[in-house]
Every structure is written in C-alpha cells, then in structure tokens.
Amino acid sequence: MMKVPVLEIFGPTFQGEGAVIGRKTMFVRTAGCDYSCSWCDSAFTWDGSQKENIRMMSPEDIFGSLDELAEGNYNHVTISGGNPALLKNMEAFVEKAKGKGIELAMETQGTVFQEWMKQVDDVTVSPKPPSSNMNTDFDRLDRVLAGLDGGDGSYNLKVVVFDDGDFEYAATVHLKYPSIPFYLQVGNPYLGNNVENHTQKLLERYGELVEKTMEDPRMNDARVLPQLHTLLWSNKQGV
Amino acid sequence: MMKVPVLEIFGPTFQGEGAVIGRKTMFVRTAGCDYSCSWCDSAFTWDGSQKENIRMMSPEDIFGSLDELAEGNYNHVTISGGNPALLKNMEAFVEKAKGKGIELAMETQGTVFQEWMKQVDDVTVSPKPPSSNMNTDFDRLDRVLAGLDGGDGSYNLKVVVFDDGDFEYAATVHLKYPSIPFYLQVGNPYLGNNVENHTQKLLERYGELVEKTMEDPRMNDARVLPQLHTLLWSNKQGV
Picture (spheres, chains in turn brown, cyan):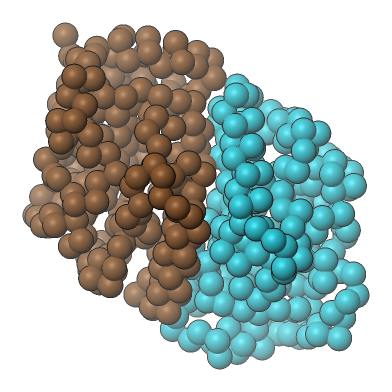
C-alpha cells in the first residue's frame, strides 16, 4: 500500500500565494521536512509538536477525506508540507488524482526530485534565502529543475524575502535561471494568531518589497506578491 | 502617423490585479470608452474631467515617455483605458513594442476586437456585471473572444463583483466559456483617496467574495483576487 504521512487536509479554500494565487483548491499537507527554516509558517509539520496528528494515508483515504469535506465542490488539490518531495509514495495519490481529472499543484524547496512531480500541473520550487538559516545546494536545485523540465506541467521559482540579504539571494537565483517564471514573496514574521495590526504590518512590508523590486532592473521579469490568506486570516491553521 | 489619445503613462509599478497580478510593468492609459460604468475607477478617461491632459502620441512618443521614466528598468507594458480596443491605431505601438522584445498586456470589456490584440501576450476581457449599469452584448463578446482565439497570446475573462447579482452574472459568463481561464475580482466602491479604513473594508469585501466562491461548485475553476494596488495605495492615480 502506497501510504504517505498526512498532517492536515482542508478546504475548499483558495491558494493565497505564488503562481496559482487566487485558485480555489483543497490542501493536503504532508508531514516531514529536510529543512527547519527559522521562520517556517508550518513548523508543526517537522518540529514534533503535532506528531500525534500524523495519519498514514492511502490515495483512497486522502480522497475519502477530501470528498467528505467538499465532494463535487473542488477540482484542484495543492500538495504542501513540510516537503512533499521527500515522499516517493505520493506517486499513487498523484496518479489517482490525474485519473479523476483533478488538477494538482505543489510546493517544495528544491532539494529532492521525484518522478511523480512531472505530473503535477504547477510545481513551485522555493529555495530558501539566508534569513531561513538554510543553505542552498545549487547542484541539487539544478537536478530538481532539470527533472521538472522533462515533465508535463508548469513550474516556477519563488523566493521569500525578509530582508536585503534575501533580496540579493533572490536576484542570484533569478539570474541563474532566467527563463523560469520567477516570484518574489514578502516574508511573514508575524506567525502568532494574535499579532496586533498584522494586516497593516504585512502590507507595509509588502509595499517596501514592491518598491525595491520596481527600482531594480534585475527584477524586470519578476512578479512580487503577498500571501493573501495571511492578509485575511493571519497565520491561522486549516484555512 | 499612427497616433493614439493617451491620458497617463506611468511606472515602473506592478500589475495589482488579474492574470498577471504582481508583474512589474509600465502603464499606458488611453482616453475614451464606449462604456460609462457606474463604479468606474478611471472615469477621468471618459467623463471629460481630464480632457485637457489627453495627448495624441505616436509609438515613438510613447516609448520616449516610457524610457524617460524607466529606461532599462522595464520589459512589460500594460495598455489600459478607457477601452484601448477602440483604437485601431494602437497597432503601430504594439508592433514597435514586439519589435523591442517588450511583453504586453491589456484590458478591455470585450465589445470591440482589433487585429493587433492578437499580438498582445495577455489580454484580459472583462465584461461588466449588472451593478455597472451596462448591458453585455454577448454576440459582440463572442466575436472578441473568437478573434483572440486565433492570436499568439493568452487571454482570460475577468468579472468584477460588487453584489449577489454580479456574482450570478459572473457564473453565467464562466459557464458560457468554460475553457477560458476565469477570474473573479472584488469590486472597489471606495474610490475617494481619503476613505477611512479603506484597506480593511476592501479586505472584508474580498473575504466575503472568497467565501461565496468557495461554497459554489460553479466556481471550482475560478481564481478570486483583490486589487493589490488598492490595498497598498487606495485609488490614487498614477501608481
């Protein structure tokens, strides 16, 4: 049985960020990550705090949960994590989804490639900037992007930016892969559920990133986006 | 000389809405419209209030202005209005832009087709819902979409939603053209520059539209977006 560790299944909601921003979707969030970013907004997927909520699920189990939530009311599923690219067994879910005519998106940091990623309609590869305290292994990123290049879907690069060092890192990544659609996403340091004026603070940070992007000719091709779900709902889990 | 009436040229800024949301771009806003939507956010393009600012400009004039603002710092231009599809002479600007390797986007309500629209990379066709007090001529919309179907670029449908009647209209449009990418955009009734708490009010309206979309199986394929520039800057002109 091709089971995968799942921490959350929720929706219908909308994708609040990146290349498919605004798209009505369901989320399947897998457990486990090879990174531990300082500002991770889903640290519960790898820090052990919600270990007891992890369920080993087959494709049938996952679609059972999805349909219980929203049968007939979705045709798009986003695979998120953690890093779902760690899971070879996700292949069975992806095949079942494609067989049902469901569109798929996923996000991964670009450290590991799996053959099933070629069947995902929109893959966001999001290497992590210096503020995460993670180091990018560009050889591994190269291999992930080369793998996707032979696939059926679209893929893009997205870099989260908290500060000037991150912005320079973003420019380096974008210039290294100039033909891959590139997204800048403003970082969210307000991870608590009760940060005062979080929306205003996030929009201020977004405005600053927009300004920086507008001034920099290296970013002529870039798209610069906020996380819409955090503007609406802060960092609440399950939406 | 192929001149067109231009009201504003500005940038670099970012596209705050629709299919190319977040993209760094320059704006060329043409004067004149065949509509007079009740809630138009650029009514100065057709209500006569800025008539004295209209300049008849050749492609060279327009690129002169663009380069004065941002030479080397842009590679994408958005043609907006008014309704730029009224202007046959825009052909010369589009050809010059393509010759320079500049990417183009435009927005129009879908009443008139011009051959040059086939060369625009991203055309947003935005028929107007009942709250605008305009009536959609679906035969004309059909002809515009058929024209774009033979073009080189992408095109999409976008409907602005202020109320339940608009949402039903949006569903009708989406179901009539199910294979065309479809965007729902929350309406902005706060057009003054000094509306108190405009960002919070806009986000509340956006949250309500998100919820409505999530509950409605007719919208499974839709994307639902706010206008990011209004979240940052209200309805200020020239950004």
